[in-house]
Length: 270
Length: 296
Image (cartoon, rainbow over all chains, first blue to last red; front, side, top):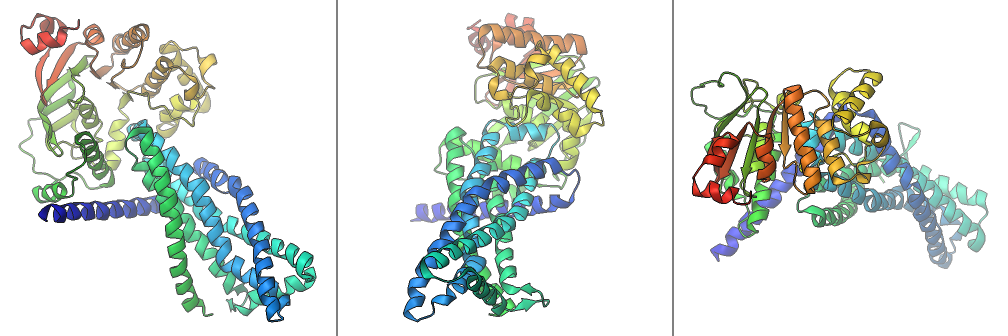
């Protein structure tokens, strides 16, 4: 029995230590956003790697999700004789939930794994030690640009996903349900307006739909950098870090999405 | 680090993991603790005898342990222009000595002097500056994969100097020529396109780019064919002779150690059991040293 207890004890301490490490890495990376020297070139490069290069996958998933939403909802709405509201349903689902979450999951899979693999192999080939030795703080040089780029690019990708998804819904609504494009977009706008406005002009749906990806961007980049820098055990360790990153980031996105929704619904009102 | 903190740290260590993995983890944690702390290391220090006169690099009674003792009462010094080669079996903590000299790690006890300055109490930011005095050549060269050879060698110059692009270009070419690489052929290549020996040479060029007075080498000849081993050994000697660089080399290649060393330090069971010139070592009748030299 004491064997089991002490093992639990050791395991728990290790977990807590890891959380502490993760938090301190995240805070340091955010603090360095405002501290010299700035690695502007690295930020731009990362914005390209995280944002621009993810456009294709985000457009593709967003478009098909918008189409399937329209298809499914038209069947349901037809039974209530409310087919004309397909646009409302697609826009509410895409802007509030699916846009941010889909973009988040796609970026977690595509970019999170890439960051973890890159930093992980830098770690096992002593390149991180080399940075330290050459007088560069690896957090500032490697982590901060990635976090900053993800914080900026995730909301942008989400907007793209939303727009493409709503257009995808329009295609299906016009082709299968027989709703004219103009009527479709009118219901889209009515739905957005019905969520209410903050400061008179900013739709609450937009706030909800943009705060989420911002947070998701932070989660993906810090989790990936943490696992990347914590890599040990050669190339095998790099593979392990990559897997852990994708799992941890995806799960965190889905869980935090629930709580963010709850918080924002109570702050912004429904 | 206080006694209490050390106690607490002891508790969280894994018990059932493999020995090697546990040690690696411990070293990693210790480095991360050092790196994440902005506070100067705050441990009781005995009266300071100060660095030995003329010593550029000096370790004084250094002890370090993680789960188990790694280094125990290590002392050695390197005067200006000397090359000290630390030899010993694999896994005896040789590379740890380099990490202590770079202050990627801090000793439990003892002092490390670089240019007469005790580096143990420095904060992380101050340690970054002290490291600029030293050029480090890593075992696997540790070139930055994503950068060309030119950008690799130029890295320390871009980071820490105000040199113009032309000056940096000239300096990079000069360093590449010094390590016998044709600048025009290699500057635009990525490290992955180079052979092991060439990578090592680029690593040396990067280490010496900012003209440090101190060079540290971690297993500079391991994994190289005999011919390339000779080339790298000659390079280290050339750095010492032509530029008067003070070096510490960690190696288990006793043959090249004899060629380049002013002094050889033999690390055995956590401490230095022999420190002297190669001639003194060759003349020693200590049974372990005779065994160790047996391969010669």
